[in-house]
Amino acid sequence: MRRSGPPARDLVRLGRVALRSDHTLAYGARAVQLTPTEFRFVVYLARCPGQPVAFADLLAHVWQYPEGTAGVEVIRAHVRNLRAKLRAAGMPVDLIRTHRRVGYSLEPITGDRRRRW
Image (tube, rainbow, N blue to C red):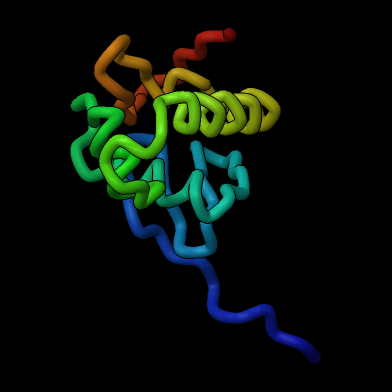
């Protein structure tokens, strides 16, 4: 009999959102598998929930680009893909909030409100 390894454990929990050690984002009973970059992005945002994280900080710490070598389009493309995954899994896409000309934040949603984009 094969074992798939130790069970995933919650690394971060914010309201109904849990980030697990197996790179899944869980929202209540639903879960979606994240790429390593998506996972680093969400974990970095979770360090200060509800607070905007600047594009420059994200590029430096999540994507590890030296200052001035990449544009915000890199982040926007990943956020677009991440929101599509959330939507497909029936999760609220406003977990990731856009702060125009500033950056993004992870919003700790406690109720069951959903916004469709």
